[in-house]
Image 1 (cartoon, rainbow, N blue to C red):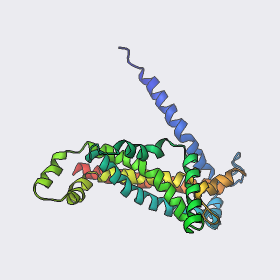
Image 2: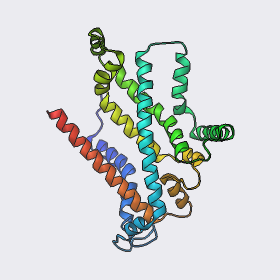
Image 3: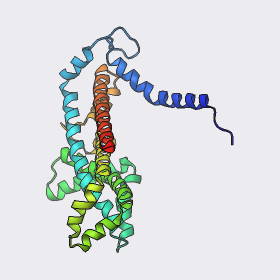
Image 4: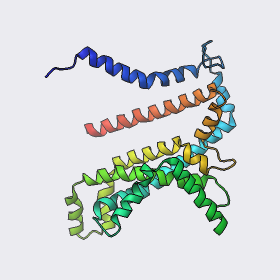
Amino acid sequence: MIQPNRTLRAIVLFLGYAFLYVPIVCLMAYSFNDSPLMTSWTGFSLRWYHALFDDQALLSAALLSLQIAAMTATAAAVIGTWAGYVLVRSGRFRGFTLYVGMLSAPLVIPEVVLGISLLLMFVEFGKVFGWPSGNGVFTIWVGHVILCMAYVAVVIQSRIRDLDRSLEEAALDLGATPLKVFFTITLPLIAPALAAAWLLAFTLSLDDVVIASFLSGPGYTTLPLEVFSRVRLGLKPEINALATLFILVVGICVLVANRIQRRKESV
C-alpha cells in the first residue's frame, strides 16, 4: 500500500487549519486597527475597545444573550438528560416511536419552521389566555430550550448506552430506589458528557439568530440579532473588538478545562 507523502500531509493539514483560523486571526488583528475602515491598516490602537464599552446597546444585547444562554443550557441539560435516559433505560414502550420522533424533530426541522410555529403558538396563547402578553426573554428561552434539548438528549443517550449497567443493577439489588441510583451512580458517571452537553446548548443558544428573530420583541434584542442588524449596514470595528473578547474568554476556558482534565487523568 502506498503511504501518503509526509510533506504532502503536512501541507494539507496546514491549509486546513489556515482555512479555519486565518479569518479569525484577521478579525482579531483588525480589532486593534486605528482606522474605521476594514480594508486598510493605519496603526495600532485600542480605540474600538473603548468604543465597545461605551456602546450600551451592544453590551445590553451581549448580557441578554448570556443570560438566555445560561438559562437555556441549564433547562435543556435537565430535560435532555431525562429524555436521553428514558430512551436508553426504559425500553420500547407504547408510543416509543412517536416519542423518538418528537424528540428528534428539532434536529431535522428547519429553524425557520420551528420559529414560525412557536410564534403562532405564543400568539394564540396570548389571545386565549392573555399570556404571554408579548415576546421577550421567556419566548426566546422556550424556543431555545426546544432546540437545544434534542442535542443534549443525543449526547447523553450515547454516554448512558456505554455505561456498565451492572453497577445500577447492583444498587437496585441492595435496596436503592431507581431515583437514588440515578443521582448517586448514573449522574456522576455521565457528568463529563453532561458538562459537554451544557456547553453545546449554551453555544447553540448564544449563536442563534433565526428563532430569536421570530420570538424577540421590542427591547429584547439578543447579541446575534444586534450584530446581524449592524453588519447589514457595514462592518464596524466595535464588533471585531467584541468578537475578540469572546474568543479570548472561550480560549482561556478551554485551556483551563483541558488543564484540569489532564490533572485528573494523571492522578
